[in-house]
Length: 369
Length: 254
Image (cartoon, rainbow over the protein chains, first blue to last red):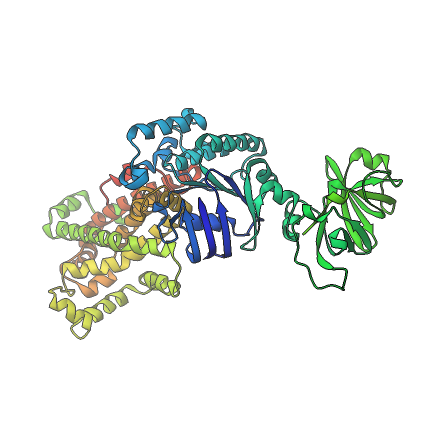
């Protein structure tokens, strides 16, 4: 559907380098990355606004790298919605229709009746009927967003690009718009490419996705997969794995040593294979990273008998109240770990700075990359 | 105030019947209008370019555009004459084409365009800058080519600023004296006529002409003032201008 190959872009202060991305037809693809990673620039490269310095972009097999924005059939909804302030909601939505009728090819086949049907469908789907005569400045954030979505979708674009669709909204609206986006994606069957810096948005919306950092794609795959098995320290940190440690791996990768700790890992087939480095004869030593989610670490005052194969003592360095949960900073040897526990546990375990405590987690909770 | 009350009504009416006066004021207004028209024609693309692109030497270009605002007006007149003279290639070229700057209506319009253009360009540029580039980008992704994007998005949103620029340009051109008097003493525009009447007959005879010129200029400024006041009110609700420009565009100025 969208096929980006070896793309490099220099636009304003943003630079993309050798980006490869494959988005399948009908997918809800989420491009994840921190602010300033070049996400919006990638969208603008697809729409034709940001000039491409190298590489190619194809939509539905058609090479569009050299086409002007108006010939690409890629609709965009910006974070600030960019509604035309001098036009009413209806005029905003109908803005692009004029050019569909003029254009030849696929878009030109649409008859007036189809257009009116689509207008009614979108107005109903996005609950815009009562807003059609309002001016953009009188709308709420969610209403503006719905207008911008309708404006982009009515021209029947091949792909809809969404620039941080939820982050500018009031938290109360977010859930509503999230559900609406999901429904809209299902009902229109269009390919959505959304960028966001919020991993939880990606988890709740996306099918497949990619993580971008400093203008480069770090990892691509199913969102749930990226969440479970990050392949780089950056991605691990980005998806909320706090305990990212550099380690050496032994015994076919089932044993890891890091900062005075020995940790057991689940067997190899669950993990992506890392490149082996030359080690001693007989035993292969590999260097890499491992990560443990804070919520996977169980704290106890006594060693617990269970299937958890990693168990060691650590000293509490700080207890930070995070509202719903508490974050416990731990020191084990030279290794620093973060665990998430409930407020109740903090009281039960009498956690305080300097207290010695048992940390346990399963071998499968240790992620290697 | 003294200027407006000193001439007697009888004198004023009589001055209005003076064909020379009416001709001069009409020449002032029409050449100023022509200068504003030229500024609109050439200044609009220039202002758009300056607001949307950055290129090496952009500041130099902007400084050159602003130059007529800062240098003394007789100097502008002299500069134009030197370029338009027979000894200069541009002047020779213009003579060849039958365009005469010295002592002609064309010369007056050239001078007035020169002094009025910076005001229009700056106002229009500010107007274009206030229109978010994102709006233009969205318009393009919706299928609108660059020209359609300009006329459907940028122009309606910047229209008010452009109109203010036109009014400022006209007002500036109507009040020009120093540069015009050097390039074209004849045919006489109103400020030159006032100067001549004062020199030849004295204060009493120059005042009525001045009265009418002030009346015309003042009404222009009043219009400008109403426009900017409305702009401020609109701006609070609607950044980037609004659709109300249509009724103003019909006010006979442009």
